[in-house]
Image (tube, rainbow, N blue to C red; front, side):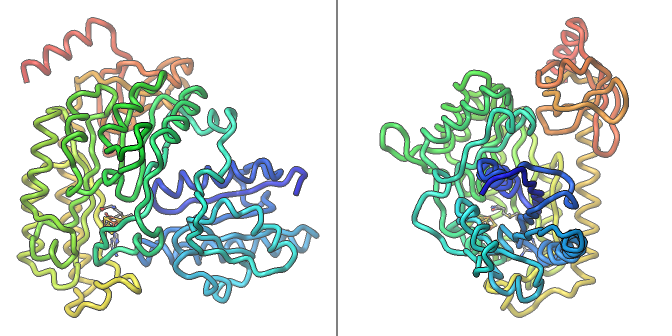
Length: 463
Ligand code: SAM
Ligand code: SF4
């Protein structure tokens, strides 16, 4: 296949999908597809879907309705637009997608992205183009690496998948079914990818996986390395100034990972550590394999290693059988930890998962009311955390121009957006900024002078 064709890729759901979308674009580039951000210009539209909650899957079908109109308009102009559904909805629903949305030409599950060029050729010939297998060949080896140019365009902060799939089988979750068994990429390949990214100007790398701290990839010594050890190795890559990892399971906060929080200045003091519930009864029914006390212990161990750490989390409210008492235990855990932010969701029964079959499903209005109460508490904690940032000086990794002329925006160590009036030449670099003001979701600051930095250190020391 050749020629200047265009592909529009839309990602739904988690960071793994963002990473996968980039790798699909990289694999299609040598096939003559340039990326576009305008669906109406595309010859190939790919929806990279999420199946984690019912709403996520329904969003895909409504998006497919909009894409169908674009496809029909293009056909009237004598142009063929192909539509592909990728990701976890593709994996879970397979052929059913084409039945429900006949405008779809091909369906590709997360483990088969490297086979996209072949699937496109098959769809063009009018053949069946559905691939939801778990192939034996290594997808990561077969996917093309990004060009330097593509990496630069994607910005100074990049994701690297180090682990995929999950063997934990929480009773509410589709991931073990859609992403398959847990696999870890070898250390050498991850390091090579980090080196390529840093060489193209990336300053911050987030190691990602559905269960990232279960990482056990093969090291150069032929032994299984932990995530803690991998982080130490990536921190040595020249140019990598910041490291993060997500998403972690509280049961896998192993000692080398805790030590990394103490020993690696590049590892940012912000940890997303999902707990789901504060009730031991519900945690057991969820098959989470940890109690509320285990979670608090994990939090305490990380805090002891890195006192500046802040936490975020995921919560599910209205899991089958959740009583008011169980929900109170969740609120109590939130009060005890004090989060800098969190995601909370109403339980959504997923077909094929054990929890969907459980008796005592919680009525929708009860779920909604609990979700509101939990979100109010988390919002208060987030606002309090942000308010405590005023007058502090943070290193900010500047990522792009801000909304207003003369403004640039970056991220604090705690992932908060920080808006500063400063020269655009600072984009791609890390510079200290003193926070002067906060809004619900952003911090505002001024570039710090050496004198104000000195003052901030004194304030912290005296706090
Ligand atoms: N692996 C991570 C963990 O162990 O927490 C998270 C994986 S999942 C992609 C992200 C979040 O979606 C979960 O932490 C959970 O809060 C939420 N989630 C998963 N299944 C859900 C369901 N059936 N209903 C509501 N929320 C769900
Ligand atoms: Fe899903 Fe995370 Fe549980 Fe694995 S550990 S089953 S990805 S919620």
